[in-house]
Each structure stands twice: as structure tokens, then as C-alpha cells.
Amino acid sequence: ADGAVLAKAITSAACSDGCAYAPPIDGTHLAAAPLDVLKSGNYTKRPLLHGSCQADGANYISVPDLGSLADYDEWLDYRFPNSTGRPAALSSFLSATYPYTSPRDGCNVNCLAATQIETDYSYFCPAYAASALLAAQAAPVYQYVFARQHPLSHRSDHSCALPYLWPYHVNINSSDDKDVWKLRNQSPEDTELSETVRSMWFSFVSTGSPLAEWPAFTADNETTIVLDNTTSFLGNAAYSRCGLYEANSEYFTRCLA
Image (cartoon, rainbow, N blue to C red; front, side):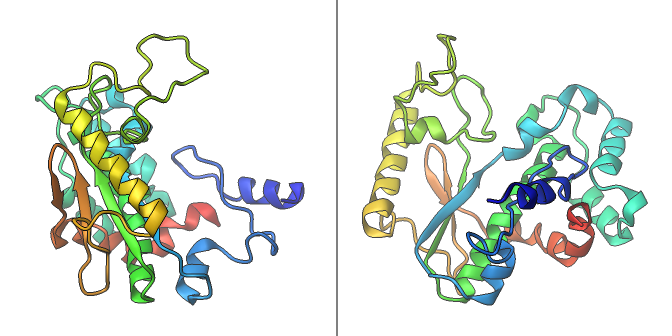
């Protein structure tokens, strides 16, 4: 992409969480914003497999700084500033849907309210919105949530599914023998899950569909598979958390203006 176009895209996308990147709309490789393309339906409808990890947002919050309710409230105002016009209904929604839980009350980073907010806002709900758009246009789409906690990091955080898909992958940039990109000392359950995940992905690559037990996400059946020791499926209650994010999309996209 043209350097000036890329620079403009980067400098126009400085969000309060510290991210500063966005796809450059150069008119050649990308004619419009991805969301606008999905809404238009003007794209080649190929099968899509995508999803998120259950605690994807865990890497992007500071756990030591969330030791009290006051800290949590301060983080909420940092993440979703009142100064930029946070709607009152959104404030009520966040407080009711993600009640504060202290990490000192037997809660690890996976169950912190801030982790769930960051996961929903940045990963799960965008994936759900994309699946819904694709399904409405009869495009084949398969959505997952990876919930198994990695045996070394003990979190189902960002990229946690990769060692299960490539269990023999070595991070060549790391000399640490405990490299978390490997499934070392895995349990029989981890090995079985890895084999299941690899079978599903390989089937998708070769046929455009994962195994039969993973139904497509459709307009009539919004199915998201949960990959853990056993497979299960999300209910509509999980998707309902995304409703207010969509309803307040104008507020949430102000950091990209």
C-alpha cells in the first residue's frame, strides 16, 4: 500500500486502549472498509471459519491495577470515556452485565469483568456481527469460541488455540525451554482436543466445511461451537451481550474518526 495512505490510516486509529492501526483503504487492494463491504454484499462469498478465545481480552488489561471497585470504575472510564459522550444506557449496561469481581476473591484473569468486556468488545461481538452479516447473505460461515485454558499459561487468552492447531510448532525467536507455543506436558484431554481441532481445520481447508458435528452459523440457527474438553454450543444469551455494542456503534467508533 502507498506509504501516505498507510500512515493516514494508522494516525487516524488511535484508540484509548493504546491500539493505533487500521486497514488502509487504498482503492486497489481494499476498496472500502471491511464492514462496509460485508454490508454491501459485493464480495466473493467463500466459506469462512473464524472466532475468538474465551478470555481474548486478558492480555490487554492490567490485572494489578484492578484490585478494587474504584480501580474498575476508573478503568471503565479510561476504556469508554464519559468525556466522549458515553450514553447513560451504556453505563448501566456495563455495570449490570459485567459486575466487578476482585482477583483476590478466587477469580483469575479469565473471569475478571474487565477481561470479559475487552473480549466481547474487541473480539467476540465483532466476530458475531460479521457472522450475522455473512449469514444474512447466505455466505457459509463457521464461528467458534476456544475455551480450553493452556496448560502452561492457565488462560484461554489471545492466541491460546494456536498450540492445539500446531502442537509441534516452535517459536524460533524464543530460547526458553518452556515456550508457551508448544503443548508440553499436555494431558490426554489436551491431546484429544488438539486432534479434534486439527481434524476440523483440515476438513475446512480441503472441503470448505469442518466436521459434521459443527453446523454452520445461519440466519435461522446462529450456532457458535465452544471448543474445550468437550464441545458445546453457545445459546442466544451470549449473543445478547452484543446488542448494546451495536446500538452504540457511533460512540464506539469515535476513536477511529
